[in-house]
Image 1 (cartoon, rainbow over the protein chains, first blue to last red):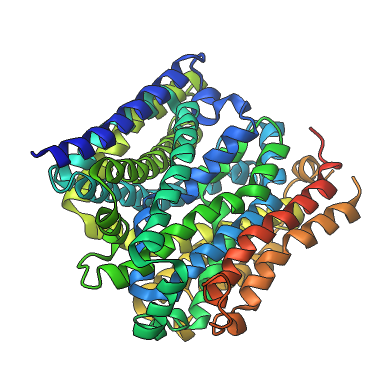
Image 2 (tube, each protein chain N blue to C red):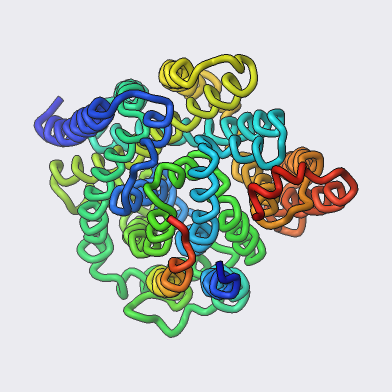
Length: 482
Length: 69
């Protein structure tokens, strides 16, 4: 290992050790309980919440995939910039309802709401199962992303398998000890590092290409089709952009780990404020997109598109800075991955076990089960990443489309007295079946995303069936609509 | 709880998704003029990252008076 590799590696792993230590310490200062481990005892204030939600934007996908998409497809990546605005409008609208009822009725997971509002433990379990299945491929994405980032940042000195195994053992340890509070503090660290990284990545178009105007003049000359629909590969027409944006706008806040983040807030104002101001933080994704376009000019023969950021920064920065940017990417993957693992463990312990298989389990037993599941889920995801990546690719294709099927049940839950458990269950099942059909049999009919077809079918089934079946008990309705 | 204030806040909050989704068939094809060296369709997205929070802040101020802490 030469000096260059050592410098970069020291920076990357120093960050991993700091992150693990901070999360570990944040967790042990509070008394262990189910509510503390899962939703930080509902004590989180605006600054921490802001960075917690920011960390959800800056995942391994943002750091690697966004630039990779700009490099491969061009304009298609704008949909991600758009949903950084639109998804937080939805979040702003829903957060007040999420938090208010969670506080009032002591919900810990999203599935708790479904089970309570629709008087159905089975619906809670169904939502919990779909939620965890949707999170697994995203955990795997963070694991794979970690490997790619560390391998690139270490100039190949550490192979990606070794890198992601070491990183995710650290993640499992800090999630086990730190729980929600530990993860939230890693998000704060990530948020700070991201400011630095974004400015450094901005150096790629400014220094490497010679300025933003020069960058787009060259792209317009050499790759004019990249700048408008249907994009670089010609596969993303405008209806793809619109339906994907609609899907993420409605689906983003259906992910169970994000709902749990809102539950962790001290008051309903905290997530509302955080959502309102989050797009300003998302501006930091802009340099990543520019780096992707810059790769078209600086490294046009790049074999792996996801390496666009790491390969272009290597052209203009010394190893220590490359290591720091690599640490930023690692932080993004690790903090997001930690949150996903913790939410999955909490849902399985709470909704599959305490509310399903083992109803007599105390809260403390459930909390310890969730903790133990942290290691089990991490090991399963690592093994799947190594030996059965195709299974997770299958789940990834349908994950977003599956969770958006919770949208009717969520919105009707707060706004429509006649929504019934049979209507909502039927809608979710039919919606998921339509998603599978429009993903694997008749792919994205009319260029519209499969999730939107599933959602349309879901509404079409949930509304009439709700009207035809007996309404929930008056006592339940009073709790939600009085 | 005043329903009208809640409705006003939610109506303001829904503006960014509506504009970005429904405006796409027109805006995505507009490369020129370049603004700050950026094609207009990319600048449009950047602009909404800045304007969106202003609208949501107004919605928050309207809505927050109704929130029971």
